[in-house]
Length: 513
Image (cartoon, rainbow, N blue to C red; front, side, top):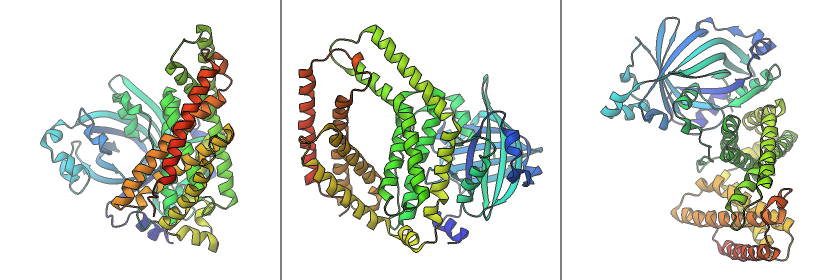
């Protein structure tokens, strides 16, 4: 498939100008190392795009544009003002795929230029239109280059920037790779090559988002799993790429929040994103992902999951302790638990700042876009990529549903490890239901899917609590004393409810039929 054919397939029927951009955070002081990389050393400097940039972003007091995924700015460069409207694309993945409309202006907004853009509908509201005003500024020192790489033409911008609003400000350094011509996968391959010179962290935080974070800390809320929307005629390759992009985006977005806030909910959602990604790989493993590179990615993501595990386990333990009825834990025990949790987060932040973790995320992003599974000319790989996703999903969900029901027949007769394995199977079946649901669009399928998903969610929660009781972990001795008899009663209740749920699951009508 040619680059033009691929672009047309990604965005059918769209005449809007597109900005496909990959953003990477750069550690302070690493810019010179990056500039010394041979690929940039040989790149053509873009003097007109370089220099000092002064940008003013506009919105209403209640951030109406931001809520709709739209940014509006006037940027001054070399004495000229350019108004830019940007709007998020349909799939919120790792590469920023946005509509972009630019208009020369004389320092004032020209809202007539919003005609034919997503902003047009918003500013039709006269009150909103009147409420638009400067929200924050971004000052940028930019060095821009044009690089030819892997059959693509890419604009590379090294930015040292500061977003500010009143007495609040944040400084940051980043690299933007913008596709001018060729395949989007080349952005990720170039990013991996540049990371040889300096550690680069994949980012989905636009400059405008950094400004909004200054205005409202509520924008630092954890990012939940995005809804997966697949076209009914999607191929397996298209389906996997959209699913994997969504999962990795959830990981990356929440990782940034974990480093900023150490919030338990952000770590939880980061871990959910990672588990969803691993589940997606498991679902497609025997269909698409049979090559050695894909096996390496699976191993790397397993390591990343382990890096998150201890801190998340400490959070879960604290939540469990606070929610328990009965006597409180000894204060000295609580101090020890808090100490262990603090140490776990210290270790976690060290892992997130490590070159290895950054490389794993960047390698995974490059693999999703342009890995061997996607580029191989092997006939088997080509055939697997072109297989209709709907046919594959129906077969894969049927296979997993059958195996899950078979395991479920012996819930009380197996040990804790087998019950935990059943929970993992149910979780993957649930994720598969969420991933593939949009392929089956009839009203009957929608109702069946909703019921099916509810049963799986309840089972996952109950079996998870059973696993918590079984494992306990190294902190169990700090729990308030609970009688074995009470623990056994709780276990029996959970087993009864789990068996009832499994009976419902066995009778459920598959939504993919």
